[in-house]
Image (cartoon, rainbow, N blue to C red; front, side):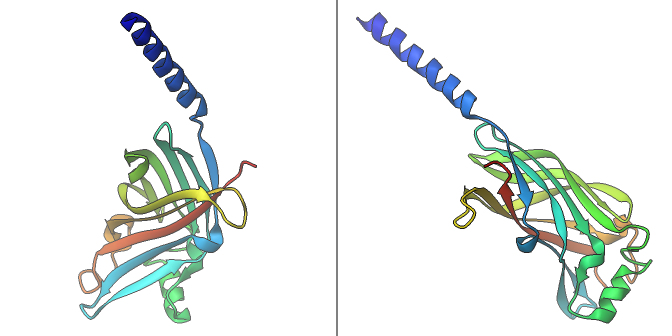
Length: 195
C-alpha cells in the first residue's frame, strides 16, 4: 500500500512539473511610451540635485515568470531630452554632451536578468550613450505584472536605477564642478502583444 502511495505521489509530482513547464512561455511586451520615462539626476555646482528626463522611448521586454528569465531592449530618442528649460535642452544636445546630430539615440540591451523569487531584482546589460558602450546593472526597486484594467491584456511595470560616470561616455564637461556621477532611473510600463 505504501509503495502504491509513493508511486502515485511521484507520478503526481512529475505531472505537475510537466504542466508547469508547458505553461512557462516567454511573453513579449511593447514599451508604452506615454508611461515610460528614463530620467537622470546629478549634483549641480554643489547647490542642488537636478532632475531631467527623456520624453520618447521605445522597445520591448520579454518576460517569463515561470522560467524566471527575461530580456530588455530599450531605445531612447536623445533629442527628446527635457530639462524644463529650452536653452539648457539645446546645451545638452550639443557636442560637449549628447551630440544628438551624430548620436540621435541611446540604448540599453540586457545580458542577464537576476530574479529574487518570482520577480526580477536586477538587470545586467550594455548601455550605449554617444557611441560608447559600458556594462551597467539596473537595480529593480519595484516590479508588477497584472492584467491592464483598460486594455484587458497582461502588462508589466517597473522602476529601476543605476549610477554611471558621464565622463565614461565622453560627456565629462565641467567635471568636477558639476558631478561626474549621474543617477539614471527609469519608470517603465509595457503591454503584452498577445491577444
